[in-house]
Image 1 (tube, rainbow, N blue to C red):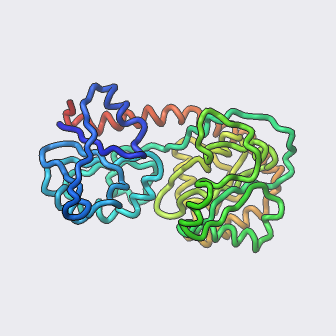
Image 2: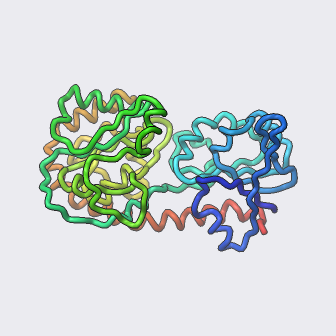
Image 3: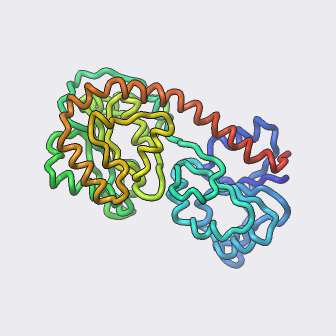
Amino acid sequence: MRICIFPHNNEHFLLKSYLDSRNVRYENYDEWDFSAGSRFIVPQEECLLILPYTILRNLNTATFIKDVNSSKCYIYFIEQHDNMNVYREVEQQISQITRPVHLHADAKLHDEGIPIATLSYDFTDVLNNFYLETNQNRTKDFLLTTILKPKRLHRKILIDKLKQADLLKNYAGVIHSFESPADFASQQKYGKWLGTLTSAGPHKWLDGKIYWDLYNTVHYELVPETRHDYASYPTEKIWKPIVAKIPFICLSDYRFYNTLHSLGFKTFDGIIDESFASEPDLETRVDKIIQTMSNINAQEFYERSRDICEHNYRTLCHFYFENTNRFIRQLDELFKPMELT
């Protein structure tokens, strides 16, 4: 079967390496007809067409769906990082495709009826940060570094309630506020966190760096994850306190802690009240986090969490490699019935 891969900046870094390792032929495919708008030319013969979710932003989707449905193509949507955010935007269009569709996810979706063919959790290269001792003492209650943007309602609710409860008087970090995409684009993309970058590590991704002079001053981290609604989507935000071996409280979706547990990680129920984690209502979930934080003795929380933090670090070290191996096995299962050559 012919394999056509649409070339783009967010190609999954393992996909072509996988195909090369299996001696599978593939071609870059980027054919368009601009005479009648942005019409992507769908191959009509039997083939596997590998596309990013983001392509649906840049073409006439009605025409694309019609062309796909009249073709003999199999569709595999995959791209590196953040594709479940884009998937939410194009979910309705994808559901109209009647040809076989396979999806890659970097998150566990609540709707188990969605046909996820491959699942991985990226961003775990945060492990490339090496531990550094600094001269700081742990005098701050918690670390909070986040960006407030229009699409991150849960973060605004959290910050407002932290202010109301007077819980921001002894924290480390910085809260960036961008009211519009233009504000966000006009500044450094990921926002420079307050603090000195004392661990460069081998990668250049700023959000994946750990500012050890901040992490070594706090007892735990308050983590506002990317999503709060339809998916459990672990990113660098949750992996960083695990690498730094400090406990965390995470605001995400109401199944997020269950997802962490299913991956082998432990959280801190029994040391703190984690009833917030399974609360379906967002406002109530944030209220319960505020209540938990109000009752925390930060130093005691840190000291009683040493064994759990060590377990989580070791689990992440194993998971970092096993995650890749599992993804490769999933690709084998996906491609084998197609008799790719």
